[in-house]
Image (cartoon, rainbow over all chains, first blue to last red; front, side):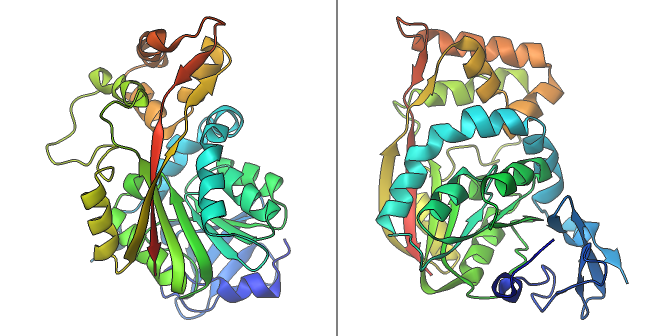
Length: 55
Length: 266
């Protein structure tokens, strides 16, 4: 999926509201502070804390 | 406090509102187009606007804002609705999120709207506080809810399913919990928003025929919740009965409805 830089700038981890980044495979968004991976399903990121994977 | 104990909106609403996403997108969401247009016009949404729709559904509001040039972002609980939103607004940023835990930085948006969404949040106060957090200082947060039920024809439809489910516990907020102007303004003030203006928008529900009306009405999360507790057939019968008085000579249906918009400043 393609996320523009501008949009990535306003995206935040729903838990800590800190920065998130696209993972290497491009199928998830990572919050390094919370060590959580938010999955991207059918191009739609699922930003639910309960659905995130612990890293 | 463990996260499980904090009421959130996502999971249950996602399942209920996503169940009949296509009918919602095609038949029910377009009914409220007049409200979206009125809000965007009042706020002069244009190419300078960074816009977030909280509870964006299948994205009709986002689409209209995008047509005015805005950069649009939408969150909803239902993946199925978001997939339709994304197909309508290719450059839009759509994600599944809890209204109580928005995945955005502080002060990111010029305009934040919640069209009939804050009152359905598991924790409306927390949801509105999040909307304020992500709005720029002086930006607009718009809370849209049902108009006052007295004399509103659509209130008959909203009440039609009541008999099918056990009464909610006393004190549970109903669909009109925020329709009272005083309650609505207080809801905003509590979240740190400054109420600016209340505008009522007449938005009649119009359907070409009975089957369209039933498909539209039965696609809402509330109708699906009631159907799960009773049956599809019971919901269909209840709506058919409630619709009877609104049948027009040409076989179409027209039900008067009003939406109340509170414009606030963050």
